Length: 351
Ligand code: NAD
Ligand code: ZN
Image 1: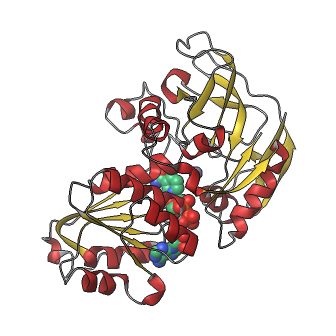
Image 2: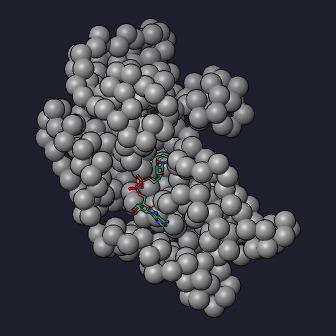
Image 3: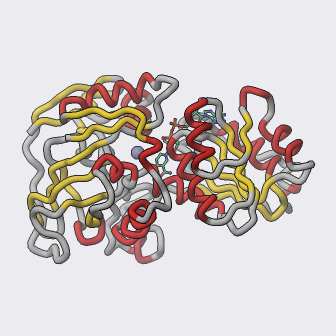
């Protein structure tokens, strides 16, 4: 079969590989739609995971089941399915302890285009099919379903990590697609005010649709100063980090009220340490919590999050700015993600 792969750090191309084989708990999927991710760019061009040779890229997609293993109970050939970017081993101790995304070691639930071939192939393999697949509802198009692989669960996990409650003032730093879903999730959770940090006009427009109430640019000066100004010096209850680098922690902690929580879902690609400002962290006694997490995968979560989309509570189509037709267009879509034109939020390839 054909797949679009990372050949080595900094280089991608089409390769031929054997079709993946199906173990007793697994499924083999033929894609219906695929979407590249910022993480694919980090993986190839920043070497985020280290060297990988001839590894098929991609972890966002949906498809049709072509084969299931003998232990798989709830899915069969021909089912249209969704799958998350993170595919844990649900029988692991980590999963039983509430951290499925770390099954097999820290971040070990991230298998696609990390420890095994990703979804940008004519076929792809899903481990633990009963735990990791979910049926694709009729109300959701394949293009939209791609957003349920990573953007929705990650943005919403930021909201969970920050523990957003009714009436909270929430600061979302970075409003690419993950940050946009954090805005949508914070809105659904009842935030009273959602302050968004971002500069791209179309992201700001879409963030407004998702419930963003205030907008500031990190290019207009210190984020914390701007947030403290607009909150009369009080700061915010919760912060969600979905863009920038380690430098965002300092303004985030400064902007956070005592007792507040910072939820990070951002990939921190550079720097040895994260700088937590001592005084604004209450000289160690400010009750300002800092949590960061890889999104949990899994069928239960996919079923719940997709119900929000199927019932019109979240319109993921607002993020789909660029559409391609045909498997071979995966390459163009990935290159678009790399070049990141100003009007891009997410590209999607429909097969
Ligand atoms: P993205 O690159 O499209 O969006 C990030 C946004 O942050 C961009 O719009 C960028 O302009 C903006 N930004 C850059 N510097 C900033 C700063 N200093 N302050 C505010 N905004 C700034 O990426 P995305 O697809 O939205 O993903 C966001 C992050 O989440 C990435 O790092 C990605 O790797 C990570 N991610 C994490 C998980 C997880 O499970 N935790 C899953 C998927 C993606
Ligand atoms: Zn992704």
